[in-house]
Amino acid sequence: MCVDHLPYHPLSPFIYAFVLIAALLGVWWVLRSRTVHRSDVEARGGAANVDSACTGTNLGDFLRATDLEQLPADLIASYS
Image (tube, rainbow, N blue to C red):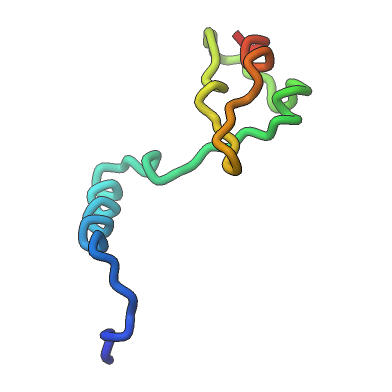
């Protein structure tokens, strides 16, 4: 079977090596994404977190995909 017609990116070997190393080391978190729905944040929706004593929030890390805008500061502050 000839594979000469497949598209090739110059970084392909590095990408494949990265994925292989990530798989071997068990660090799939590198390849995952996290999402937050603004209406859930505003309504304080979601499951109750009863088994941890976290302080602060990481809501400031989330950016809207269309314009890379953060959630409003007052909304983030309400979780701190």
